[in-house]
Length: 404
Image (cartoon, rainbow, N blue to C red; front, top):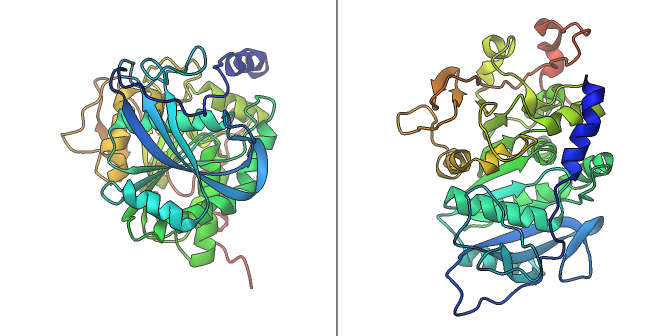
């Protein structure tokens, strides 16, 4: 059944498009209706394209680059959507439009920009997923920041994705290529005296990059930088057992982790097929044993979005396209607030488990549970017998000495 469904899923993955070349800044007319603006700092390991309409392509650069970008958001739009222009140049009255894009050449210039845009000392670092262009990631972060109403300074880390459905392996290797670049960006941000705390929010394949960089930081220093308070993984495209190792090896104390999962995520179904029928963290049913009874002690909150409905036919971007969820991220999760008090009310049957306590924050019962550090593989094929929990919860999932 999986093989028969793959061509159809690939069709859906490749059937969505929008105009290229939207990064050229457009002027705002004095007579135009007022628009909202999102200013962000963009760090990238992509290669410069040499074209102001795209800025960066999907190839790998030998050095990181930094750019300040401002995106104008039209006054009339549905929350959770990106209003791509139907023709160029974009019309700020109806479309997302770049109004400023300037290269930053030094760390000092980057810190000066942050000081001018500081928002309570909170920083949000967003890492996009597979099959994203530079402009895709810029507009998606602008949408998330605007719709969530978060009080934080947005920082985008965009890695070299070729934005081609057949380039899955290239994209995956590009995340590995970018591990040190992201780690350095996080260290530079944490060293800024204007930054009080950092929230990392990663999506899909970008969650692999986030976890690898945090693991790398933990191996170097014995722990993740204390300014990194929160890590949000949305639809994580990570082998479950590998996630367990990454989590364990980043050291203690760790940031607070929140994971968004959905069992109807079609993109993760394709990823699982490509990677040898290995379950992806973002597609698990966390209410199943042995997750809940034996592994919830890790204290990672999981929010199950399976019953959440959005316009995303792949069910892969629910965290950003559901107005309620994106506001939950902006107003509570990234500030470390609990999800178990009476002030949290969501629809569409969402529950959360924090510290082992199941709390219904929706109108219909759903499933969610704390995802553990030492998670095991959940086989997809019925013919494969699940491995006993005791086989994988032993010493091989504990932090191990890497050098003598």
